[in-house]
Length: 141
Image (cartoon, rainbow, N blue to C red; front, side, top):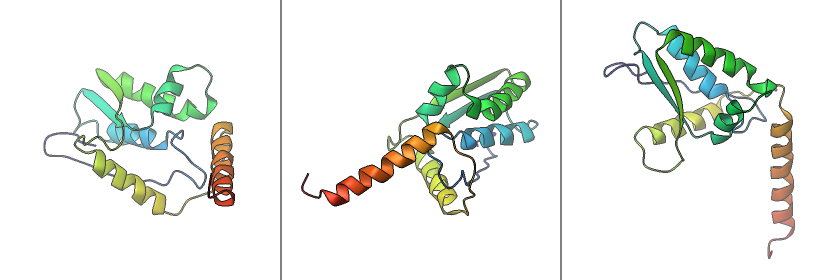
């Protein structure tokens, strides 16, 4: 988080053993960090993320697994004049993106807990498993 020209705060987080990009933990953590430091941050905030699926899901109604993120973003929106979540594609040479990728890798190395996972995460994890298995079983394909 770049809170001002002089104040930058970073944090790597574990998002769970079976988590994929659909999990909104990083965005929620960023929003919570902004709320904790209201006095040092600006009135307008942009949270950059590579998780386009989270942004898309936030627009849809009824995504129960995003309730905590929605509540945190609502609190942030009530506190600040403007809150924006901006998608940035990975590996696009945008300043700070490489550092964010490094923090994500650090988070992946942290102890991961067995958190409850969503249907989408379970489906994706199972899909990866069988895709990897098929690739190993059919190396010439």
